[in-house]
Image (cartoon, rainbow, N blue to C red; front, side, top):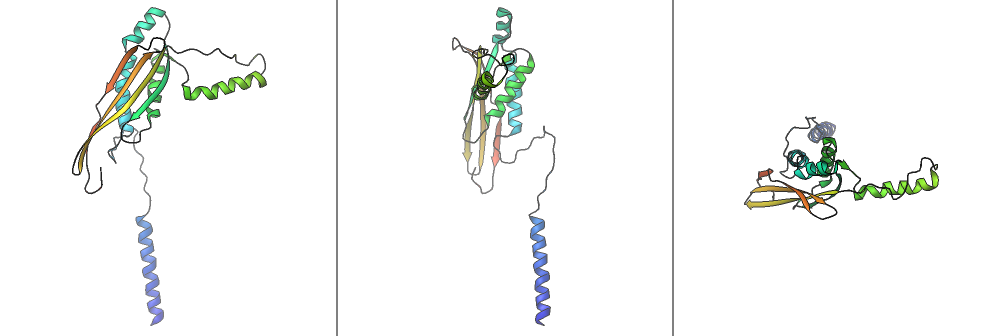
Length: 204
């Protein structure tokens, strides 16, 4: 009798373990990069794409860039500055700035130089070349290209909440500034991202 009970308990344990394992399994589904997925209601890749496409198109066609090319006969040199996250959530703004940089370079209307966060490594390499590279191939010091314009920006949010429903509105600003004179040559703004989020119990 005891042996029978032991066998039943063992079988039940195996079944329960199997059910727990099945419930905890991971499922991965590949989707197209343009697929709109809003899981948490916070800033995501779809928002980056919408904002970047809108602001980049505006910036590329800014009169300041056209006027510079017409007046100087050369492309303006642009450097990417800081895109501040002034929102109430964690946002990796470097993704947004890289999209700006790639689109502006590919437009053929501007030249880019390395940002401040990138220049340190490049300068270190140039310094080391003075010692370790041949005289014919070592790159000269103090021969960097100075930027004409700096691109900066920010991301802000406004949240309105009542009970378990909230709206999240995002404002993304981008500015093109003349480095020599501090004049703002172009200001872009996008406020297309607005979400209504309803949750049953969890706090928004």
